Length: 463
Ligand SMILES: *Cc1c(COP(=O)(O)O)cnc(C)c1O
Image (cartoon, rainbow, N blue to C red):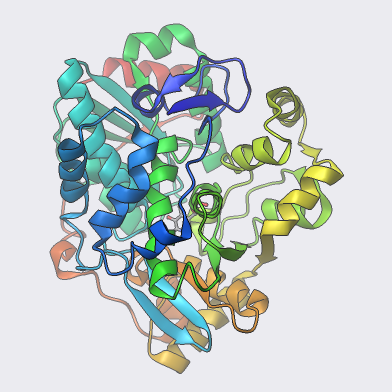
């Protein structure tokens, strides 16, 4: 399987190289040259299989010859061994025709663990074989960073530097990033927003000498391997509710468009999906883009669902690439417009194509709070604010006779203040991390400045 850049000016890569690089050298994102399709019969055969077996069947065609069969099975097994639930991604009914897909039973209590734990194992396996080391730099609005640090801590061929916006992540998220003691992981509190962090990251990748000297690698949701890992739970959950004989829809709390784009890949592989519903908070660039065709950035407004507080949604570029008939020149000129101004207009043909598969909704802070309260009143279930944003939109967009699966992206205990304000109940941390508030923190505070960031990253390397 070959991977091509959405901007058309970077070399085609194997899975292994696309995974180790993350972002393409032309600033684009890697996508598979073609998406493998499954026959309905093959999808039926996933029924009743373990999460790990489904993961193997779904991901195998994407990784090509990067791993031997037994090696890949071992990687998958190790990746999910630390999850706190046997089914890895349990499905719970929470309303009439609405199910919650719980994706927060991994070590950092958010869905990012599904991809990051797998990436950690895959990096280790590949780097060992090659005798190489890399510096992973990531920008996070909270959950990616903790998931990356948890997945890579203590590995001797990897340095991990995570940039997060100072003061804009929850205390649990911050502590998960700043308390691991291993020298190969470092957390940077940047005096800026998540979009600033993400922009600095992209600029580091565009700086070839720096990129080569530090052997830079990205594990942000722009890394294709992360999208791939997330395709798996679309299959396990849809099959549990009757696919491929029955169509299902999904509602996904969305920020960088990585999680929901995995749903689009599942659909193109043959999973019968009715709607993919994009749920945004008050930072609603994607909702506005779908409604008006205008992809226009604004100011980030901090919310109670901080992992979705972004204005530039990186993985959307992958969907645009497809919507424009894989025309890399068209994508490149849209992205140039975005870089030099505040956005671009999606042409009518592309917008029409997107509208066939996707719907969207925007949820205010008040609506998020009342949804947390309503779910608790109706079912006794506590949900995190991101999940509540998804459930609110699921409620608006559900169609009769099509099961709606709402993705529960984080454990409510990761955002205890909002949940307590909505319900009066403070969700406790799982026992395995109950001492998080006592562990000492270690963090590097840095200015919102690319040169200073590069210097600090270069000077502090452990490997
Ligand atoms: C990352 C994250 C999201 C957004 O996912 P994207 O893939 O960036 O769209 C939603 N909810 C939670 C809890 C997250 O950590």
